[in-house]
Length: 498
Image (tube, rainbow, N blue to C red):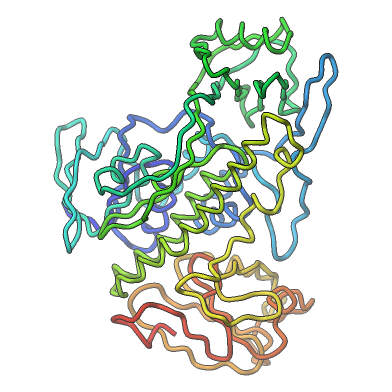
């Protein structure tokens, strides 16, 4: 069997990539060696920028239905609960429609993404494991193990989204630099709870030398995610009775009891970054490329960001664009992961001390300010507020009928978008192959022109005169100016993309 892209790992990163490629008409196989979808809560925070990505991919409604806003922290000091807000509640605005981090257990995120993939005609092949592969100049030959035996598959590209222990990364011989602290461990348990434990709070019981216990209520369930930081020489309690004794010993609350454990795991701070994201036709994404501490809810979000950046580039190359475009994936995303690793590590180091800066969440975690300004597809072009490589903000325009149109609605889909602002509208040539170009005219004076009645679009985008804004399929600005050129590497379509 031959496919365009073989994706190994059906977590949020791999599934988001499969969704993006499938809607672009790319033939994809998404495999996972597990026999069913992940059942644990693990990564449970979705940042505002990722909510925007999920809106574009068509998975946002189910993610919103399955999640909630974060509860307040409830810090237990003896018999007193001290409430503290981790983050201020945001107010939706024309440029940032989703200002709040969303609490949703990973099992719900996975299922929402899997459902969206199925709606597009794709599916996850559970119980299918990558055994080995050989990479050559024209693609990858892979051997898979399934319930029915072995199968040989040929693919133009292989993407490893198979987690921190990635078989794809190891077999490709890509170094995974960093460290793992085996002396610092946290037992994570999803379970119901007997006892009077309010679901209004993310409960924290501080302890000596940072040995805290936490219990976060998981939305739309009767489950809590327990986090028990273990002593260096402590054996993790293994069953419900032993975990209950450990919780009671620490909290001094004899009414609490763990019941009906759904999932449990021992987490070790593992901070690593792949030395490269691509080796020929083999690429890495998500935890296969970078692993983080859980503090700040960054790992899952960075992985979905990887998929969103990689999807359109793979599709363009498969349609005939120069393969050098794939090198821009690492150039743009690896610096993001390096920055996120530093942020999440700093937050984690302060958790044991209950440092206020480590408990608060703000713009750094939301990923709205991540930029590709210094990347190979950027230029020095800019406006009063934005530069090429920045996230393209949302805004509300008006159709001639008076109907409001969100820019994010216009961006939604596998295309580029050119926004011609003002009366000057230079012709933009575009190739027939690859992603199409959608054109919007704003304040052009033509009968079919969109309008900016409040001036919010012009202010947000920093526009003071006639300008064309080119927006990439992943929602970042690809060009600005009177006649912007998108900086594709030279190749088959050179001089014709814009």
